Image (tube, helix red, strand yellow):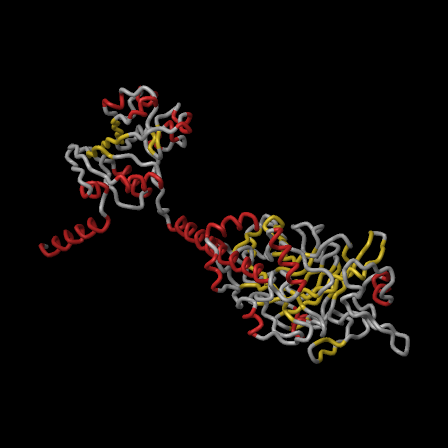
Length: 563
């Protein structure tokens, strides 16, 4: 028993030394606890430094009352709110009030306050809710505080009759100081705080990477890349999901590169912040994750099978609509079916076109202004889209394909898509009603040619889907989430895409392939993407040593503008 008692005593002493207390801290500072007053000399430099961080005042005396203890309920309540071990005995502290500045005169008309210390009003003194030093009772209003009179502010222990006053939301009506901000006591609240800090750090890193890519693109040898980078910098835009153009049931994380469904709506859609480039081939990818990656989405229930759709849409499509169901939009669903302008079509091999968790879907699109023609709905242009799932090009129905070399052999389209006669006539008679809206006099798309039998061959590859878009509208990469908890990461930059060859994305040979941000993915004479090409653009992660030139404060300011 003696040894056991000694062990318990050692544990209590060790715990007391590790945690400490407010009284022990004040004792080390030279203030005695037995109702005595001891003057402590504080360095003026240290005092000014503390006062700059928060309003500080010099402590004249500190004493704790003996014999007054808290109830068991009050002790548990205080321990739940405080992170550090403090003395639970009531104390009386005498401090000097700081000089009031002119701009703070109006703030002290109702209550005698400075910093985070709230002195009770006259009503509190009238009802006797707190004891006061005689020097404080002489102060009828805040005017006498300018002379640095010695004040004594006592904090009594909360009793059942006064516990209601401690929960008053107004600090000026309560005789007690506000509880210091502490680490949350419950596991769930602590996880929320930690995840919030992790999300902030990830957003800063992703934002720094995107800004560095824009700065680097300003010095690119490609004129299109430089022009796009200048537009992004001047408009404070980035190649990410647009938070202001996302449904209410979508949460964006990782610098708005990841979208997760957290709401109860049937369909939740979000579009990219910037549209695709016109009159050139643009490629982007979206990766589906089996489990949420970061943030508060780890606590959300998620379906075992992800159901979503990835495609293109204009700003006319509502955010609660499945992409592809609206006119001027097209989408590839997880079932492998393609929905374009409200019409369903099944690819030749639906097993290769279906996808789910841990899959990456790519989309190659070209919006050609030279294909403009007049319709009853106004002037329309043709956009062609090619989807691939994990490097397997999705083949629409009614087309014969011959993949060879670095590109795609073109075959007659034959109206296999079930398009209208006006759209079919557009493919068969290129150049009719076309208007040039770009600096290039020749369309970026390869025009069809008539063979010796008089048959017009399609100007488009057999793996492409034609989409009619209003001339004044822009196309945006679009994601629609259906299953809850599904998380998708966008890959809008050449440094993020996973494709490594021209054939894996269904791109024709002899054309430059761009990312959504204007970065070059494939040059005209390139058929393969080598790792060195990605490293030259800032590494696959896009983060290099120049990150040190940015500070967290600059990134926070930029975050408000860009996001």
